[in-house]
Structures are given as structure tokens and as C-alpha cells.
Length: 166
Image (cartoon, rainbow, N blue to C red; front, side, top):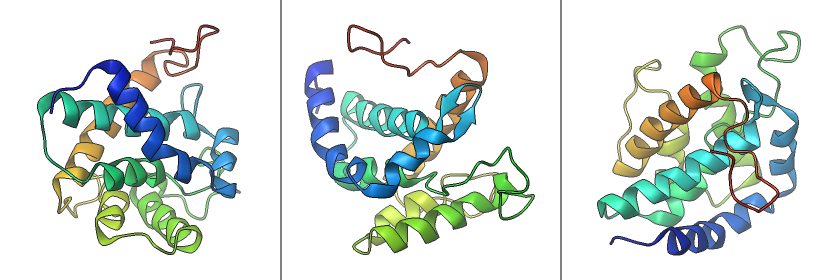
């Protein structure tokens, strides 16, 4: 199912809109993820690039769950750099659990597939592997995005022309 960049963007916007409209999603714009990238920018990049990857490679999957799970994979809603705000000192190992708890509270219709994406995106740091192709894709794309964010200054920031800076 190869798609043009415009088709991928339209499909992403269609799938992402309901999740991005949830009241607490905007809180993620106030937290820094890696470098100068906000958590909201990070999850949006992971969701968009996960969709682009499966469409480009023709991987058949549940695109709705892929995008929604990717948008919620870091829905932990705290500043992990502030040890007084974080619930524990083991963010890298425990944040999938915090993200899943918040997602379950705010999205009561979360599917088992979306739960898998959120809970297992830190594999292999957290030794429980993804159970579905969608969760594996998000886990891999998350690592690629995180690497870019550490080395590039706001790679997903929107330019004045409406595109991304990267």
C-alpha cells in the first residue's frame, strides 16, 4: 500500500485528530522529551513516521491503533528531568507503566493492541517484547526519533511554511 507523502499526511491527520483533541494531550507540549523537543512533538513524530513506514513498506496493520498507540506511548504527563516531579528515579524503565495508566484513565476505550504499543515501546530496555507488529514498529521508530532529537535542535518543529524543519 505505497502512498504519496500527501496521502500519508492526510491519513495521519484523520487518525490523529481525535486523540490530539483530548484535553490532557496538550499538557505534553509543556514537557521536554529529548534535547529541545517537547513530548508532544516527539509522540506526533513517532506516530506520523510509524504510519509513513508501514505505508511505504506495505506492512498491513491496524493504522488507527498504530497512530493512537504511538501518540499515547509517552503519555506519562510529568517532567522526567525534574526528580521532584517524577514518580520515581527509574523513568526509562517505568514510564511505559505510567503512560499506560494515564491512557487507560483518559481513553477508556483503549484496545489491547494500543495497550501493547504503550506498554512495550521501551523494549529491550524493558524486557517485555512487543506482541504485535504495530507495537514493534512504534518501538523501532521511537528509538530512531529519540536519537535524532538528542542530536538535532527541534527536528520536528513546524516551519513558517507549515512543513517540518527536518
